[in-house]
Amino acid sequence: MSQEQRSKLINGYRHISYHQEYYTSEEMELRSKQYLDLLTKRRSVRHFSSEPVSKSIIRNIILSAGTAPSGAHKQPWKFCAVSSEAIKKKIRKAAEKEEKENYSGRMSESWLRDLAPLGTDDNKEFLEIAPWLIIVFKEIYEPGEGGEKHKNYYVNESVGIACGMLISAIQNAGLVTLTHTPSPMNFLTTVLNRPENERAFLLLPVGHPAQDAYVPDLQRKSLYDIAEFYE
Ligand code: IYR
Image (cartoon, rainbow, N blue to C red; front, side, top):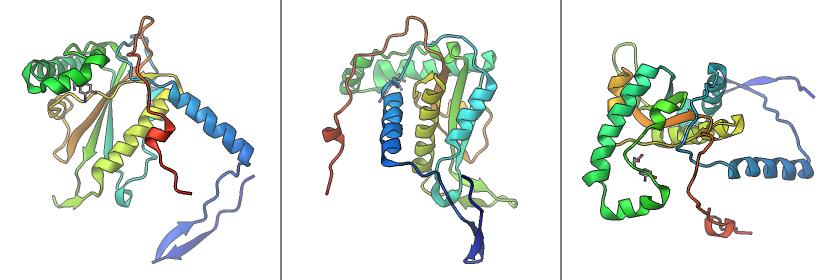
């Protein structure tokens, strides 16, 4: 049922009436459970198939992430989607160079011990095998016409939320991803030729899992570990 759209001025700015579909409690029970089931199946996957994924699916996923709320609605994000084999190769080479140093000295003993159950190492083959890499940049400021820098607000929070929505859109599409944070990440600015106001935030390979993909046998915390109810 579509409702008539009304508008009014608040502080001199146009506001439009907002309506969203009304669900009964039963419908909400079902929908919230179905969404939980979808996200429960999500795993960070490191073994990708090279099967192609269409650009239009990647576009929809990025547009979904772009619906995230952001500080003062500045939308301080840029999603760079890479399917070029040459660029993926460059990214893998640079990421592995940094990771080699991380795993062989920059990371502490206790960090390496914490990572051991995940089975990670400095081989980042997935950066070339996955059909797409989405590199998320945060915009630390907005450049003005005359070269001035307009501040963005709550940039890490905003971009973090957008990345969460990106990950759930990837899961909903039937694809898998992994939050990869090669450190330091500044080589991505050079490889992708990004402007001065952007900083690499997260790198996500996107694709189908390999036929023989394995994930570590991990458990999630229970509701009572992650929530407190005050009724
Ligand atoms: N960035 C490294 C190391 C790494 C760190 C954490 I914390 C992880 O949860 C997983 C990996 C890498 O990508 O291998």
